[in-house]
Figure 1: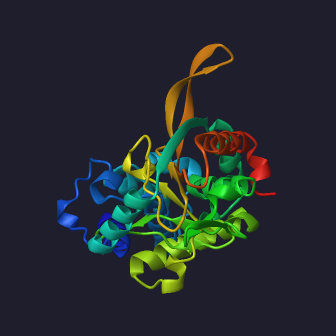
Figure 2 (figure 1 turned 30 degrees about the horizontal axis):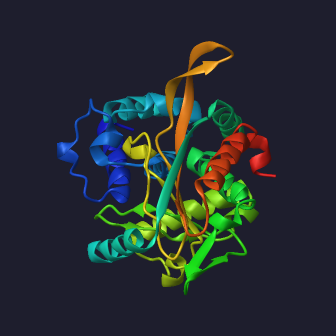
Length: 81
Length: 219
């Protein structure tokens, strides 16, 4: 799966939880939860959505690595490689 | 919605003599217990700390009937079970507090599933009106928004509200040494017509004690 395809799925999953998100306004290097105002339940649903769409099981120990959009895209790309 | 919130909160502050108590609760044992429990669960069944806090509140409330019920027609009526109103902020603004029914009597896994469902339906606007009127006490959690603590306004005719701030490492004294330990500040807003600060403080102390024995919360 290409980086663009992964990004499209991540953004679509994010918009399913926070429809007001404008993908073009997201900064890849800043904490995603702060930019989109995701609480812990939103965050869990976001990660579950990625799990369902991409088939990637994310261990809880890895949650701390997933802070920025860039972190998430890099993590998923590595897991799907 | 803003007008409805304003009316309810203004009524609360006008009619209910609030008192407030708070306690910093160490969470190292609770978080370690959760981490171990979640390690054996698939993603869809993992537990959030918020679910453990809700269950701990519900279990502790069984010993404090004066905090769980309604003030109606000039008198207090304790409730037969703990229906936790969960304060949920809506993305378009506003706040609602639908209830998790009999939260003290349900296994933690079921409570987590029901909380997930309640939040999803609240944000989708598909709650039943009855779910908004069944709470016997409200729990609000502003930890995700970064607040260290919250001192809420009681939702009438309820007589108490429990608040949680963010879970964060703070300097704490452990066996005579200063250590960074995960803590949360729990607060209680309660109705002085029904209970006193002494009982409110004991409730928070019991809640803190229970969270040091997380394996007992789900028994």
